[in-house]
Image (cartoon, rainbow, N blue to C red; front, top):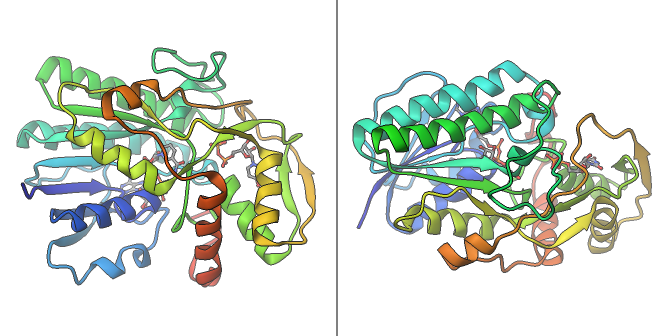
Length: 319
Ligand code: NAD
Ligand code: UDP
């Protein structure tokens, strides 16, 4: 059945690809974005599609729309972006959740929250399972993002329990792919940009910290599955369970891009999590989902995309 679907943060890296997938499935898509960390070029190719609508709006402000489903993706995601204006970041998560839950409640719409592995902070439990309550520093530089997302999860659960709102919560682990912001300061975009320019590759700390990298298409498959599943609200971990050290990632990017860049060490940012890997047993059981794209293949597609863009079309790290 064709649905009218709102995607907040719909012009972003993940949101724009989600809009595309929903349009391809025949749905009416409303993309809402304030373009804080994205540019219109991410969605200009969709503007001539008759079932696509673009609204410039800030989720911290109320809006009245009639929709059947909402994907709440609006929030800066890269550390450099979310720390640029930390108060705005936490407002986006908290007030954005309240405003969008209000729309969902009024319209009787199903609403999915893009939460994050950051709710686990610097985890003492490895790999991370959904029942782990996390180890977040509430007063550190990452707290505006981590705590904002934690409060958003609380709001989602309370609207569900108290008001019967039909919610879904996904906890997204590090995701990469075409259309990620080349200057967002995240590790994949930094390493690819540096490798292609023949610049030094900046390893923060000793490079032994780990992350598990999920390709964009796999991640969006899981979002679509989560939105359609019945009798399961989550939270559910969505990510690729194959873990790499940051040094291994740098070496892989150099190898695939054929770069001559050298690795250089830079100070480790405060509160940088030491390791991160999702336990995806719940996603497998409830959604029948697991990622299909190996890091080397996903990096190849991402590198090809980076080669195809004009870097000067993108704004530098501080938006
Ligand atoms: P992104 O920065 O590319 O996309 C976020 C979008 O939200 C941007 O288009 C931005 O302009 C918009 N936005 C920000 N504040 C807004 C506001 N106040 N009102 C309206 N729009 C606003 O980041 P992304 O990687 O596509 O992330 C999308 C979602 O997924 C975010 O909620 C993020 O927290 C979550 N997430 C992403 C990752 C990842 O690795 N990419 C990991 C965990 C969680
Ligand atoms: N990192 C790095 N060099 C960079 C950018 C990031 O070594 O140029 C490290 C960072 O310290 C962290 C990991 O890569 O340990 C992932 O960082 P990112 O900002 O992509 O996301 P995070 O998972 O920390 O939110």
